[in-house]
Length: 394
Ligand SMILES: Nc1nc2c(ncn2[C@@H]2O[C@H](COP(=O)(O)OP(=O)(O)OP(=O)(O)O)[C@@H](O)[C@H]2O)c(=O)[nH]1
Ligand SMILES: [Mg+2]
Image (cartoon, rainbow, N blue to C red; front, side, top):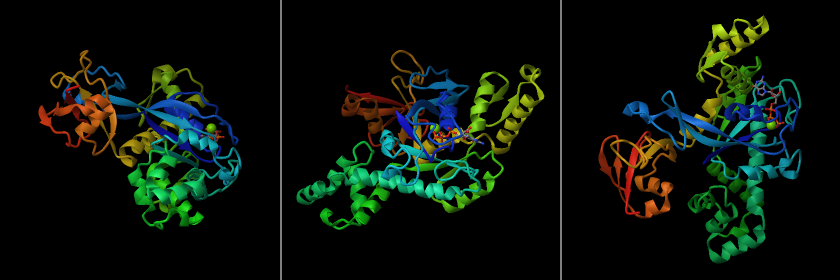
C-alpha cells in the first residue's frame, strides 16, 4: 500500500494531523514528545470515481466510493518529534525514522504560528524556516548514517567490483532507491569510492534524500493569528516545495462534529445543521461558527489536500481501474470497478499487469481500454481514470 510519513519537530501537530486523517485517537499534548512509539493508520486519497463517468453503480473491493468519490487507502505513519542534533542522540534520537524507510513521501509538519521553539517548547515569534532547515539536515544525516555504515569495507568492495551503485542501493535497501537513481547521484563524484570524503558522502545523502523522499510542507496551526506572515515567509523561502497551510485542530474538530451530525462537512465547506444544533449553548454555537468561517474562507483545512497533493502532484500518480469484463466493467464475480490502483504516471499496461500479479505480467498478451473498447499494447501508457482489462495467458 502507499505510505506517507509525518515528520516534524515535537509539538507541531503531527498526531493531530494523524488523527484527523485516520480517525484514530493517538495522544495529543501541548508539550514535546507526546508521541514516542509510531502511530500507524489508514487514510485515503480521494478522486472522482470512474462510476460517475460510466454511469454505473460500483462495488469497491480495495477502496470505497461515497457520492461518486473514490477513497483509495494509504497508510499514514506518525512518529516522535525530531530535534536539532537528533542524529547525535538528542531528544528521542533519529532511530525511529527507520520506521519511515518505506514511505513514498514525507509530510513535513511545521508550526506556522511560531509558538514553539526548535525543541517544541512554548515560545514566541519562532521562525518556522529554521525548522524546515534543521529537519532537512537531520534527514540528510539519517541517510548519511545508513550510507556510511561499514563504509570502509564497502567502499573497497565497490572499488574492486566496480559496482558502487549496486552496493549503495543494497546498503539503502528499503528506501525505494533504484540502482539507476544511485548511478545518477554518484555521477559527480570521483570514480574511486575510497576517495570519497565525508563531505561527498553528506552531499550524496542529500541527493538520495531528494530522490527517495519527496516532501510537502504542512504549515500547521494556520488558524492562529500569527500564522499568515510565517506562511508567506515559508512559501517565499521554499519555492521548490509545496507549502500547504493547514489546521489539523479544526479538521479534527470538524470530523467530530460532522460525525455527531451537528454539521455537514464535505472537506471544503461547512453547513451547520439548524435542527441538531438548536439546543447548543452560545459558546458551542460560536465554536461551530468559528470552524465554519475558517473552512469557508480557506476552502477547507488543507488536511485532505496534504494526502491528495502528495500523490497527485508531488508523486505524479494516477488512479486506474483493472477489470475482467470490459463491457460490464466488473471482475469475475460481477463486482463493478472493484479495485482502484494508485500508479505512477507513465505506467504501462504491462506494468499494471505486473502490479496485479507477476504471473499476469509474465503472460501478458494485450490489454483493453474498457472506456473506448479498444485494444492497447504492452507499452501503452495509462491515463488517469482508465478502466483496463488485461488479457494474459495466465
Ligand atoms: N491552534 C492549533 N493548534 C494545534 C493544531 N494542531 C495541533 N495543535 C495543538 O498543538 C499541540 C501539539 O499537538 P500534537 O498533535 O500532539 O503534536 P505532535 O507534533 O504530534 O507532538 P509530539 O508527539 O510531541 O512530537 C496540541 O496542543 C494540539 O492541540 C492546529 O492546527 N492549530
Ligand atoms: Mg505526536
